[in-house]
Length: 442
Image 1 (tube, one colour):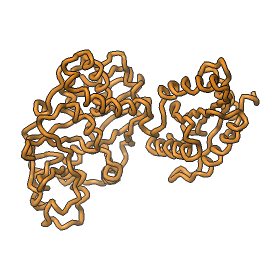
Image 2 (cartoon, rainbow, N blue to C red):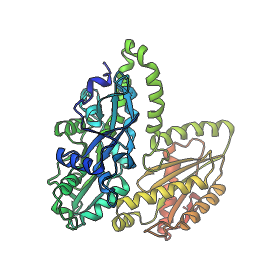
Image 3 (tube, rainbow, N blue to C red):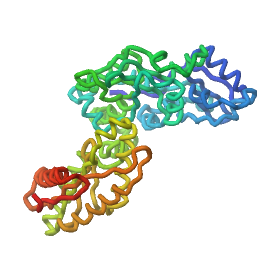
Image 4 (tube, helix red, strand yellow):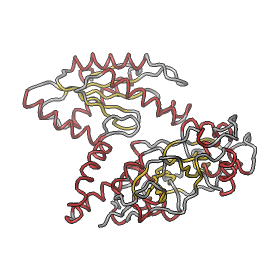
């Protein structure tokens, strides 16, 4: 397998303006060309002017030059760079990489689309389903069709969303993207109308049981930047973007490349650096930054061996946020995500560096406590419970959590210790929630 040189997949037909162009000229140029963004050629760097930047221009003197705007610089690479050296740059908020000649002059642009269009779908694992990938929770936003456009545009500017899914009975019926906003601006449309007036509809979706290969072929064939993923009943499940597929595919690429010794000699250093980054990504939950199930299982095995060898104690705490579904239903999934992040930060502040903290799934967290007996684990769980109860979360207010505690015994499989903690957790819920129960209470 050959890894392309970046110049081979670069889009050379790029719309650009000089950094000293006036703001009014730049806006007119974008509207005339019907582009959501243009490249701004600076003195030494390249920048991007997007439709969201235009929305932020309100109140500025339009006779000023683009140089006076706070634009974001585009990452740049030489045109002879190997594609492996560019993948990490696509984790940047910007979806572009600027490709330059040796004299720093503009050669062209590479986007997520260019990367995904040059992936070989046959190198992907057909049996790896979207629902497995999306369990770790990708950021997205969906709203009711009655939401007002002006409000949504402000939210897109603040939260840097490039799209919003419009739902009815939790089923996607439309999408509003920056391209739609560009059309609204160009045609001077009324921003105080509901989003249903301007959304792109219908929404083409893909089922959560589809493979990563299916998702790549879907996005590439439709020339989309993302795929809207739904449950079997058609309700929203998630959104997978091009760069998510890039991240996943890289690990498969690396495996195949190891079988090609000639390329391995030339690219070994690149792979070594890239693997460190992607090993980390494979170990953590993307929303909270805590360990995921896979990494927790790996660390449990290691700590269990130490426990039995040194005759140490070890305990488990399982934590479940009380009435979390009600939080999501009342305030939306974005606020629910913020609650999960707050809980994660509280756990990190309360626990020791040696403790292993994992987002087990949904609103459940699992903590492994080396060198800790059941009584000490109970005391620590009570401390976490109080710290969570004392949180004051914006919009939501105060929340609580329930706890189950077990002590790991010699001969335990991980599932045995978790099962006892889980039964203790259900006892805590049956006892009114916001309390700690241990296996001794069973």
